[in-house]
Structures are given as structure tokens and as C-alpha cells.
Image (cartoon, rainbow, N blue to C red; front, side, top):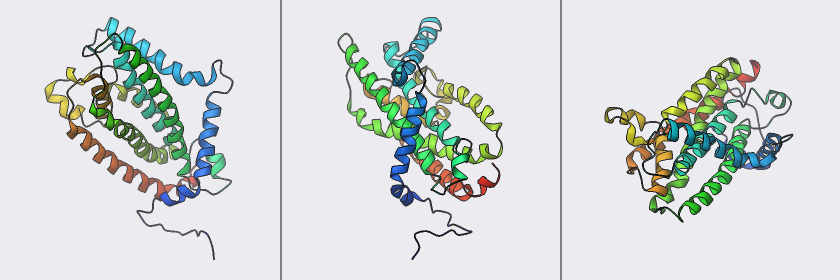
Length: 276
């Protein structure tokens, strides 16, 4: 009796999720490898997990709050920008890690068989670990600000996991699709990095949703990152006004994107090896 078999054709909706549980140790090993490789030969090592979002946030405070004077809805600028920076970094890291699945792991894929999906999953796991540390830093800073500002967490904080899953799911689904394209056309990676930088301004990372003109708000809220970021801000700051509908729409759209991404990835994971 054999453990596995190779077929020329696979069912459309065979995602191989069950296989991931059998390879959970490999996923953890990949994640540990990526974490260690990220901070080797650096001056402050793992402290970059904390320093990087804080430096980015302070830069935004200087440019967008002090110079451009963009409103932060009466929220202290440091607190206002930090959640957006953390969630954007999380999305960006998950997307970059996932879409480079074939580009940066060809030397492994060509030597041994294992479910290719383990690599992007390990990338998301690694980014999630960094993001959780950064969120703890945000909570600590939030606690300090509570001593001097009228701040309070409301019931929307229970939706925090939904916001995080939205960011991860959006990046994972899009990254799986892009990974197939970038494996064949290497120069797409350069174009996508430029598009990704522009895409940050389509999400409320450095500005509140209240400054968006009324006629464009429907388009603005279609971006899954918008309700993800604004839900967290509402949970901790009570502004802007919270609406459950955009969050539900984003959950539905990201769910569809995930299914499409998994289907495309599984249908092409073997075929793409012939082109790289």
C-alpha cells in the first residue's frame, strides 16, 4: 500500500490543506530558518522587529502630521499611525514572502518533493510572529498614553483577529497568484514592488477615512485593508464611526480571492517548475 501517488490531473478544488498538517514540522523549520536569516550579521539583531515600525511611525509623524498637517481625528499622531504601519508591514511582508515562493526556493523544489504550499504558509507564519511582537509594543505605548489622554478600548476589540486575518488572507491569496506569474516573468517583481508602494496610499495608513470625499468612499472601502485598519483604530480610539458592512464585504471578497489563489497555485505548482 502506497502513501502517495502522482497523477497527471488533479481535481480543481484539491487544495492539499490536509497535507500541511503532516508537514507542520517542516513549516516550523522554514519559519525558524527565515527568522534566523533575517537578523544574521545585523547590529541589533531581533530588535529590528521593534525598531523598524517605530522609526517608520516617527517619520510619518514628522512628515504627515507636522509638515503636511494631515488630520489624525484628534488621536495622538504616534498612536494613530502605529497600527496602520504594523498592519501594512504585515500585509507587505506576507505578500512579498508568498509571491517569491518559486523565485527564491527553486534550489529546494528541484531536489526534493514536499507540498509547495508549505513555503508560503511558513512565510505568513514568520510575518505573523513579527506582527504579534509589534502589536504588543503598540499596546504598551497605548497604555502609557492612557495616563494622559482619554482613551479606552471598546467592544470592537474582539474583531482584532478578523482584521489580522483579512491582511494575511488578502496577501496570501494575491501572493499565490502572483508567484506563478513572477516565476515565468522575473521582471514583474520590480513592477509589483513599485505598485505595492503606491498601493499603501490606497489604504488609510497615513490618513483617516474621514478625509475621503463622499463620492469615492464606496471605492475606498472595497480595499480589504481599509476596514482592517479602521476597525483597529475604532477599537482603541473610538473614531472614526465603525460600520460592520465593509468588514463583512471584505471577508467575503478575501475568501473568494483565497480560493482562486489556491486553485491557481495547485494547478500550476508542478508545471511552473519547467519554466524556472
